[in-house]
Image 1 (cartoon, rainbow, N blue to C red):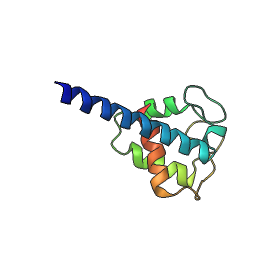
Image 2: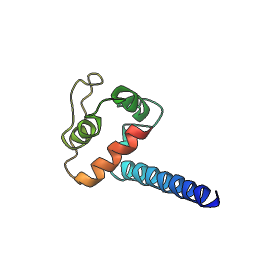
Image 3: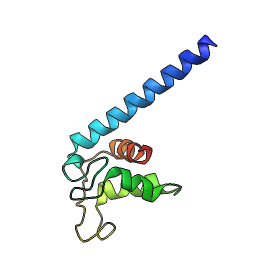
Image 4: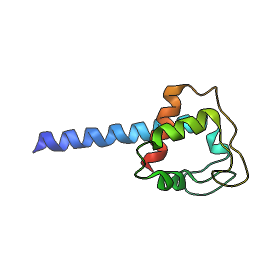
Length: 101
C-alpha cells in the first residue's frame, strides 16, 4: 500500500511540475500578454479554449498549429498573430497544458 501511495504522489508531483513548466513556457513566449487561464483578455481564456476542444482528437495538433501559424476569426474579430519562433516541442507542451485546464 505504501508503494502505491508513493507512486501516486510521484505521479501527481510530476504532473504539477509539467503543468507549471508549461505555464512558464506560455509566459516565456508572451502568450499571457493576450490570454489568461480563467478570463478573456485580448484572446480567449485558456480554460475556454480547453472546453471548446474537449473530446476533439485533433485538438492538440490544432492548438499547436494556431500557436505557430496564428488564426483569424475563430474567437472573434481580433486575429492571433503567428509565433514561428516557438519551437515545436514548446508549442506541443503549451497545447497539452491548455487542454489539461
